[in-house]
Length: 495
Image 1 (cartoon, one colour):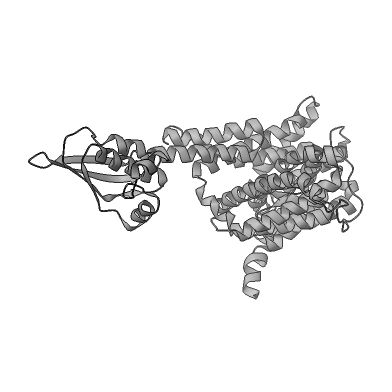
Image 2: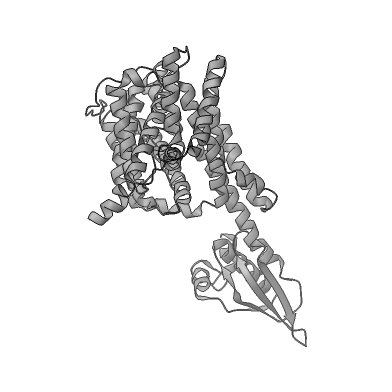
């Protein structure tokens, strides 16, 4: 027990605390912005970020990963809030949590193994582009001071680590935020600050049960939104966990993360917050700032609440330019620059999957659509590639009365037509032997192809013998095949 506590909470105290401070500062404007996107009061997003970050620190499956209110989730809430109001959003948040816990117990987190590396790379690149694009409103139609502060902030972020002794002790994004805030306050610069984003809450969150009727009508309203929120939340969380796994060279429990996200969203809904999930941008900030354990996420959530409730007069003075500089650093660090260099080396299909994931995600601003498009393309390319691994040769006996077909490779929906085309149904032979000892039949399409070949040969008056089916192939052929059953021809034609 004590060893587990040390391994997940206390092994990196200084790094986790400092990283948590940086993340807390960066969470404030994002939580407010996401609340505005969803059409709710800023405190709904701030309470959600606090609650989700604190809860997931204890129940999540990926130490060092930051979860809070996110833009991807906020976009899905707009119509619900507009048509039915905040109370229905809170109810949908609770149902989202329940669905995610169910997904965890069904071990749906294991489905991440079906997401190829090219899809993950495309997801990362698209997210980096979206993070950068989200900063552009803060850099358009502004004074030169904003550009100067943003450039100075980037200079601090990238140069401060080279300062002897203290450069590696204090996260440079934290130095950027504090120093730029001090400069803005000292010179009284008239630039946009966190306070201009919206009113900060001045009280701690309280327990709230959604004021909605507990009827099937309510369920019919919130279920489609809750299902979409659950899927997008888990998808983004699982992808982020995979990326943080790579950055830290550690493994995470994806199914526990599904359950943890569900518990965190239920807690958020009961405290007046909206649904959230893992945040790749904040998670990368956390890791780049030295955060590795559960403590960093806990610190981020607690400090966030303390700052917006008790230190709001100071927090609202933070210039948005400083936070923009931090987020630009995140987008640059998140983008996989190697993927551009590898375009010439990697197969065309891999590049198409990666670029399609980027294009769909950036165009729709929906990570789920991008990943779905990437996974679909990757599956199609894989099926097409494996479909070519089928070789069929034939030999006739010395008298020309018998022919043996030897099938080598995989027979499934992609290669079934190729399998059928390899047989000569008009050849005048008395017997055909189909040797399947080096073949494997995967699905009912493959079984139907074998039925078609055997029955067409028999129609020509040819005796057919099927040999060598392995145990797995024989099982599916015996269960779904019709060529050895009575009225096989009628069964094959569907009569």
